[in-house]
Image (cartoon, rainbow, N blue to C red; front, side, top):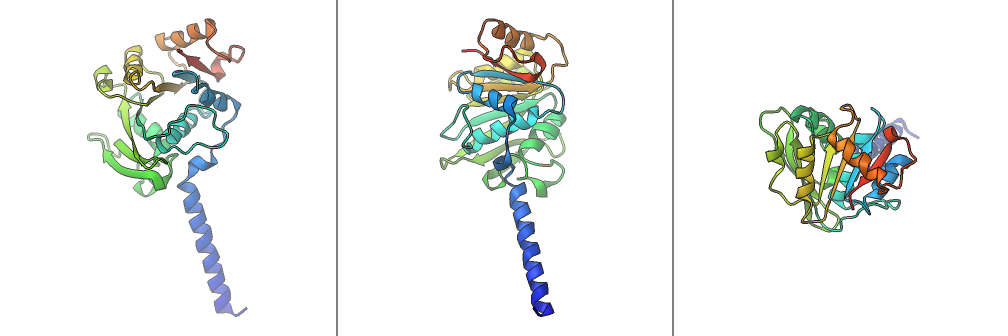
Amino acid sequence: MPASQNSSAKSELHNALTECARRQRRNRLADYRPYPKQKDFHAAGAEHRERLLMAANQVGKTFCGGAEAAMHLTGRYPDWWRGRRFEKPVRAWAGSVTGEVTRDTVQRMLVGDPRNRAAWGEGLIPGDTLGRISMRSGIKDAIDGVLVRHESGGVSSLGFKTYEAGREKWQGETLDFVWFDEECPMDIYMEGLTRTNASEGIVYMTFTPIFGMSDVVHTFLESEKEGQSSNARERPEDRPFPNGK
């Protein structure tokens, strides 16, 4: 093969591999494979409106919560999915302790690196579904909300919230699901739950229990004692807790 043709072939291969890697980065959700505890947590959503994934640090809690949020927002459910399904666009909130924490965990997981806008679309929400993004004032690189194209043809909406803003900022909306990443005060949890009452939606939390036997943790542990959990024999620091009816 002439040198010019060989060089052209190498260039085409390089371009093809680069494009393949780019598409993979912008469709991380397709590669999500939950381990058994995560899969149990997702599946519990088919029967329970309230769930808690309480586990140690750095074991995939936020990734698990983000993957489920991305599935509901897009309607892209894998073959193994046995949890709650939304066949139409959803309205949702996801939040954490402060604006900075929400940006650096929930937003980063769902949208991509907050400080590199070229990477927005490389989170768990597939890049080809991301629509209009509105920014939050007062916090550099923090997103206030994002629109997401749903498989049904409509558009889902996701708002990013914080606990530090107080209970009042969790009022007013009717939502299909709420994701709390990190433990929240009971009054904010109840406001989030109230937002899903009219839609019979779902609320789920992912956190490491750093506050001990808080009111929120106590609620789920008491629910388990009453026999509402199918995972009563699993270790309490590493299992999902369904709650509610």
